[in-house]
Image (tube, rainbow, N blue to C red):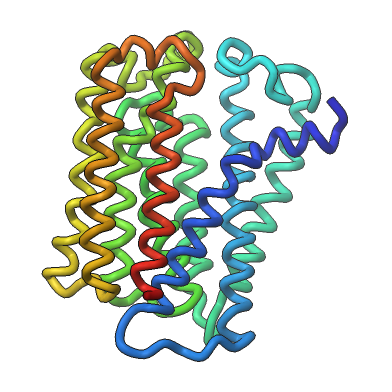
Length: 303
């Protein structure tokens, strides 16, 4: 593998699309919220562009730091990745990590509509969570539900709030309510990736939910997180917290809850299959559900 391709593989480009879409969706949602929509000027659009780029670079940085501290796990679970395969040295991966974290903070600083630095400070806090997840001595990746929590806060809650901050202030309840829905979903759904990594995680001392409780019980434990968070969407409409198109938001919430019920069916029908393949179909559906939710929220606030 050539060096450029190795660095690209290190960034895991497929995983960058989701946070970029999530940030953009939140920015569109902020623009469409309330009764008046600000004019689409360069001063409004440029922070969103910086923020979308930041979200992708930030995820690449998080991926890299995770692969540094997951090296022994990846030698077992993912030996073809750049670091365990030898395509990149440890020093080269550290260099990539430093550059991408630095670029993340720079882009977050530039995401400052009206001079507000809300996005920057949100990203700083999110960055701390990515380090807490991967880096000893805390390394919450090893500690059951704490791992899910330190994934869901930056990738669910704070991502949506940061995207909102690129257009409007986050002082109100609406961006936090929307972020909370994604937080609850990812809090459970992030476990879908752990089922295929049991062997390497166990050797490294990671106490993921499938290791702690077995694949069948773990599947049932995360099942509610695929359905219940999305029922908060119609609730938010009725409480007056969500100001988008009420009919579209109601439909989105019910659609996602039904979709989540289907994914739960796939998981609990034969949970042992989740530990037998690298990317179980439930993990793929988790990504598709997230995409539907991101696009659905944006459309519900545009139309």
